[in-house]
Length: 155
View (cartoon, rainbow, N blue to C red):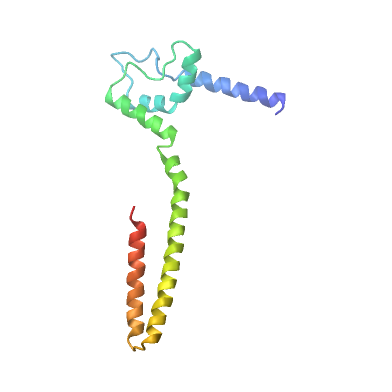
């Protein structure tokens, strides 16, 4: 990275920090008579990580507005934190491929079992010739597939 790029990045970060610091909790505009509400709580939740870092170095910067409306501010603050943290979606997305792999394994096992049962049933059917065998085979195969899928879907 060139020197001019580093200076630009540092300038943007400094300007962004200054803008965020002007909107953080602990602002004098919020008093007991004019408390911070839901939307301010949402904003403070969204910028909570940055505010926390700034509060380590700048006196008067807080993560949480003490003069607030109570439940509504808290709800907004919590929603903001959940939104910024991904609301658990990252966690569920990371587990999705494992479940997909598991489903693929169960599908492969089910196909192997079906193929083996079909071979064994054909051997049995050929040993004892029966006109209705095709109907019985189709019904048995359908029921076997259904039961195997139900069993595989159980947790």
